[in-house]
Structure formats: C-alpha cells, structure tokens
Length: 476
Figure 1: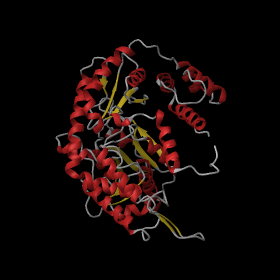
Figure 2 (figure 1 turned 90 degrees about the horizontal axis):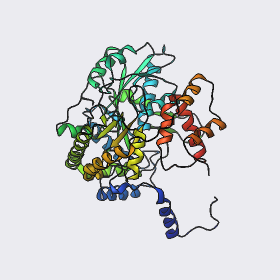
Figure 3 (figure 1 turned 60 degrees about the vertical axis):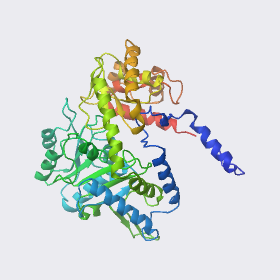
Figure 4 (figure 1 turned 135 degrees about the vertical axis):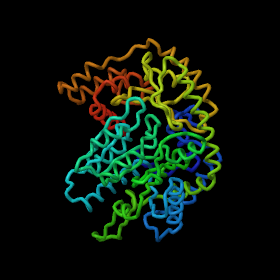
C-alpha cells in the first residue's frame, strides 16, 4: 500500500475507516468483559468533545500551552485527594499504566544511584501477581525483577516471603491494589512496614482499581488500606482510562514528595537544539487525552462515580455468587472489586472461553503461572451490569458444552523445550502453529488449542513464541 496520488474526499475516508471495524468486537452491546471501559454515550460524548478541542495542542513545553499545565496540575490534585495524599504529594499525567510503572521503576533506580552508589545491580521485589509492565520496566531499565510466590489460597502477596527476598541490592518493593489477574488487594500496610524497616521505596500499582476501590470501600467492601494514608507508601500509579472512564492515554503516577519525583524527570541541554525537559517518557504529546480526562472527572463527579460503583458492586456480587453456586467452577481468591477470576478442574477453561465467545461473550483466558491455574478473567463494567444474570445462564450452558472436549497434549513439546533438545526457529514455529490448527499467521477464530499449547510451555518459551508470532503478524 502507498499514499494515494490523489487524496480521498472526507466522506470516503471516513467510510473506509468504518469498514475496517467489521471484525472488531461489538463492545457497546455490554457483553465484552474487558478491553474497553464504557460509562455510556453521554460520558463518551463529553470526552470526545474535550479531546478534539485540544487535539492539536502539544504538551511538550508547558510555557507554550499553559492550559495544559493547568489541566495536569488539577488532574493530579484530584488524584492526590482521591488517594489520601497531603500537599507534599506530587505527580505526573502519563499515557497509561505501563508508562506510569516504568517511570516508578526509573525513579527508584535513579534514586538508588543518587543515594546508594554501592548498588551495582538494582533489584525490585515483585509478587508473581504483579503486572507484566514491571517485567517490561526491568527489561528496559536493567533492573532485576525478583519474583516472590503469593498465598496460594488468597493470591495476595506473602509478606514474609517478600521480606526474605530483600538483599543489599534491593531498591524497591511492589504491591498491587488490586492485582489484575485475581482482583485482590495485597497487604499494603504490612508491606509498607517492611519497606520502612529496610529503608526502601515502596510502589503500589493501583492502575486497574485505584480509582474504583475508594468507592467500593464507601459501599462496605473490606480490603487493606493501600493509599498515601499508609506510611511507607512512596508512590502510586492509577489509571484514569479504566474505571474513571477517561479515553485511552490517561494515567497518573504520584510520589510522596517532589524530592522523589525529581528522579523521574529527564532533562537535556547537551545538544544543539531546544532544551528538553520531560516529566514522562514522551516529549511531544497531544493535549487531547489530558483535556478529556479533566473533562470526564469534572462531568461525572464524585456522586456519579459512586453511583457507577454501586452498580458494579452489585453485578460483581451477583457474578461471584453465581460462580460459587456452580460445582464445576472455582473462584480464585475473593475479589475485592469488579475483577473476577475462576477456574475449573472438570472442564478446560480455554474451551470454556471459546464456548462463551460462540454465545456472544468476550472474556479473557489467563494462562497458568505459579500456583495460579489456567483460568478465566472478567473485568466488569457499567455496560455489563444488566447482563450479569444472563452471563451466568450462558456460563452454565458453556460448561456443559465444554465437558469432555478434547485437549491438545503439548507436554512432549514442553519437555523438549525445557531440555534444550528443541529451539524456536522457523521449523518449530510452523510445527507449533500446525499443532494449533493454524494455517499461516493470522487471527484465529478459536483460541483454545493455542492457549493449551502456550499453557504447557515454560514461561520463557511462551514469551519467545509470542514475540515470533507478533513479529510475523505486523507485516504490511
């Protein structure tokens, strides 16, 4: 494909854009449990209007567009108040949870460089349930990720195991509020005390639920405190494009003090162009996401968010009770908010996910890791609330349909990779695709066989296989 010699008319361009949606999931129907966080048409309209009004403004230099500086300071102030921070707490608006997490790890690394020069190979200690973005940060920033098992029943971080993992090279402890996979809040107060005792920075990843959890607490939910009211918490990441329903590209990273945030900032005056100062990874960035976040927070308001949370909590309670009532299904942990994970010993969760997709539901399958078995994950949103009962009806039917389904046996392949007898190359990659029933590299309709193969493989091999697949998928 090339740039057309003659430009297309506006209507033709927009019509072509719409035609590309044909195979996209119909997320507006309320049967998608993940991917899109939808609070309804009115909130979406406000967000789009605000986004487009500031689409062309560039947040590269706060002195050029002071409106964007004001938006950011006010959004950060709202986030700070929401998470129990005092006037010393500062932050930055980022493009998403991954950027917030990378910057939190960068801050810890650079703080250690400034205050602990004896540390040559910095380490951060993660529960195995910590988000994959921490692994990305480790890879990008040359920080070692030390993984610690979690409680096998609650899936919360194991405080004593985290304590035991601390070494002279540890620079950061991490907890989740909640963890994405199981929707449970780690024991933040106890971990904060461990961090204080060892004079370590302590980051709470509240990207998925930090905005919603305070409302669930108001509505009677019980879970550990996780915000800046807990002494020892030094930074928190919280996405606004999830349960605050702002458009994608909206997250905040908050620090206990400006003294810490200073290590997040990048500046360069050692080249022949303009002086560069960045609070985040990006330099040039549209003002659209920031303006839209400001607009949505002000439009929905505290009472509006509490009303949304009330509906979510009711739906989550219904779904949890329904899953617990099905003898073939087992809840993983006890979710603290509207993220639910469940598994089955009698039917394959991956086949179950395909059966639900055949009935018009879009849910996430999660591979096994450590003591967390292969399972199904639900992120419940406002558009899902009216569908909670029907979800359970179709889930029961899908269990019956999945019963006795054949399973791809990849144990031999896994053993060969583990032993080193097989390495990933064009031939083995093609053989694996063939095992999964895939002809060429495309987007398969059913995922059970692929997930069964991935689930049997060692985590490192899974990663290499996925990189190879995506490397071939994104080819013009």
